[in-house]
Image (cartoon, rainbow, N blue to C red; front, side, top):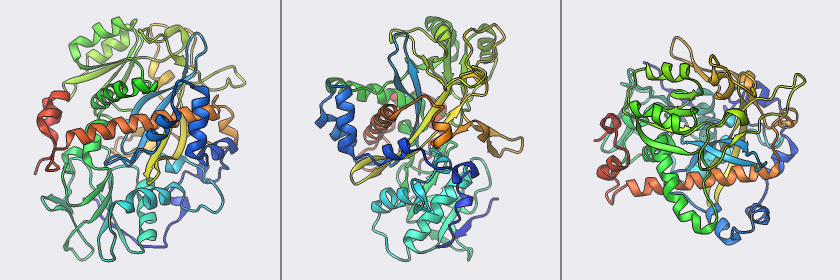
Length: 476
């Protein structure tokens, strides 16, 4: 059993909550400028470049105050077309995003960075905090960031905060979930009720934390089911919200996506996409359960695997111009990094984290990751496409612990930013795409909750017909 820790006020140490390369970095002036833009500036700039979009419509969307989805991180690709039309495309949205430890401080006076801004602006306004209540951070990954939030919370409420491990399929006798909410064993071996919990559970959170709880949980479990950790539901949420956005001349831009695909149907869909595609286990994260397929060998390897869940999603693959998927949306391909001295350019993605405030969603942190191997202009039958396209830094050790390959981490600092091939307008578009995709998931979460605060099981089952997943959802 892993032990609960006590986090006391005034014990925050920056070196424990940032990568060393981020802690010692100076934020790029353009990124700093973007982070400090007002909503009015963002609206005016975007609508100047997209004159069919109403400033009032966009302002209303950026002012959106979510009911459930308070911390969101979208993974975005900077893509272009054969005609040079550059866009920021949403690959997925994450309800337990990492990013704080990779974001340089906005200024020299900001010791706790986004940790404090999120807890202060997004978490504490959700409760009427009184001394003597119990606060906790419940986590199963990314101790560096999870503990950063705990320290920031302890400083803001000026009392101890419990750091509670809650790993999937492990001995969790120190925590229990009842109709009355979440309870933990305190330092005196007594059961206490948790009034407020920041949740950093990444692995099947729905099998440990309930949909309805008297404990205020941020983000609540329904956000994960509605699309924050469920790529199947996210795709449907985007589609539903895009129908609303159509009359506003806005949309969530994603690769062509086919959902509810059974394993034996996957080769047919890949063939329809020109023989190249991305296949995803809808409920995985940290780069796990994502398969890029560009040749017969990779397809055969995928089809030989056994899987826990019954359904998949298939997406158009974004690669280099000569080997991206073809679809009715046209062909997107990676803009990539600025070529290095060897002439090599790499695929990269951007993580844009946003958080809820009284003025709507605001950007919280940004970082980028590049692939292991450079973008090739042509492929052969033995190509390992994941090494060319996979950008996720997380990997699992043999002992089950998670590590990050920080050599491929690209920070928003003076040196790295100049190699990313993006500008201020790309950051603005990435932010808007992140907000729109987050609103879509929040709206889906609202639809999934009934009048008594419970999951509308029939609606969820009709939208996500996967018996294995439905069986996993914790009910009390």
